[in-house]
Image (tube, rainbow, N blue to C red; front, side):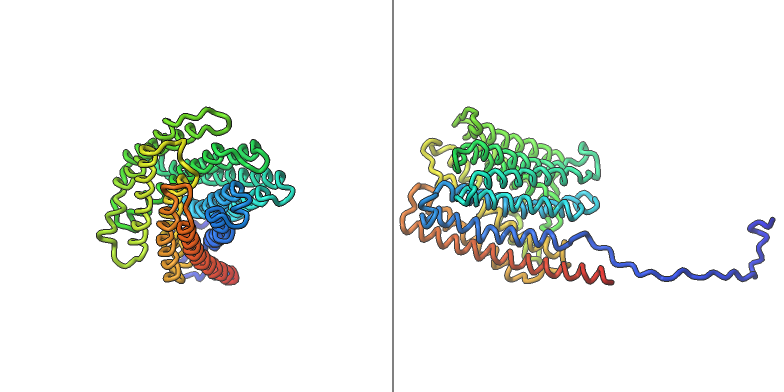
Amino acid sequence: MAGPRDINPNDMISVRPAPARRVAPVVPPAPWLFAGAMALSSAVAVFGGLVLGYMAATGHGIGDTKWTEAVQSHGRLQLFSWVSVFVLALLFEFGVRLNQAPMLPAKPRMAVLLACGIGPIVAAAGQLGVPPDRVLMVAGALLLAAGGLGGAGLIWRIPAPRALSIDIHPLWLRFSATWLAIAAVAHLVAVLRADGRIVALPDTWFVNEVTVRGFVTFAIVGVGFRAFPGHLGLPVVEQRWQQILLAWFTAAVLLAALSAGAFGLGHAGWLTRVADLTFAAALLALTWRTGVLRALRRPPPGERYALLVPVAWLGLVAYAVALAAQAVLTDLSDRSLYEEGAVRHLFMLGFMAPLMAAMAHIVLARFATGRLLWENRLTAGFVCLVAATPLRVLPVLFTSSPGSAGKYLLATAALLTAVGLGLVAAVAMHTSRVAWQRQRAHRRA
């Protein structure tokens, strides 16, 4: 039997080549999904949440006859149908990329986003009196709870690239999603405990603050720790400080939850002050350690978002200062919902919404189409949101009765906010459509 060395090298071996196969370029599943979620959630904020907020703030329509229902429905739509969908869609994208993990399947992501988006709409319809009102409130709350739990499950599925003792960063995104699940389940319990269509104010406060201080803040910090050094040229926050801040923010959210007096638990005003001061101090410490405001003095050249992000961050500093001042200088029993809402809007409208628009300059290009489409419109949306903030906050920051002039400013703020979020929605929807068309082209290739 001949071995390899017995083969005559001059012998010709005929090999029939295999037929060539056409291989489609590899693209992430549903690259249009997150941009579409950003667009639709922002549209809900404009045509649902903002309309109810305007009516409640100015006393028009159901804002006069059903003021409490309008305020609570406004908060539900803005915090969940808009914010939770918008932020979760980005966490699904950032989570896998920051951990070098494969993309999450499209269908579970879509199911979670739809549940978080549609559930609050159904619940709001019931609370505003659409029959059967209680059934709709509970059904919407159940859908939202399922979405919150599903979103947390997907984020926790993303494997960490290194041991958490070496790199604690994945816990920021995991804790963020966990806070959303807690808030969504708490919202279900609050609806079940509601007196007719009115949810108890302490229960509502618990849900709102866990969502804002837990879900939203942890998501922003987790993304910022990785995105800011690369995109803004800021120093990396070392592990020791990430651990300190993670414990600090977790304690701040727990203190707020315990101080709410929700679900029949006792309420302590002094604990609310401690919770507010702890959270405000954590935000200022975060600002100091990240150095994000340094970019205002010398923003990296060439990218517009390098200036927009620190401008948006000024709203967070204003919120932290106002929250601390409110904790120290005002009597909790004398605060009106207008005054508490003004401080919360410093976070929501003055910081979070502009930061969403600023970060959209990055994610819509890098995650969807490779380049930013309609950049000037997106920047104009950012400017409208920043301009709306003082008009929304100042008329009711120190009073429970804005008066006719204050109502005019609130209406102007609502209009500017609607234009700003409408522009963000339009740019995101256009980007989603282009990404969809490119995916179809790849499939046909």
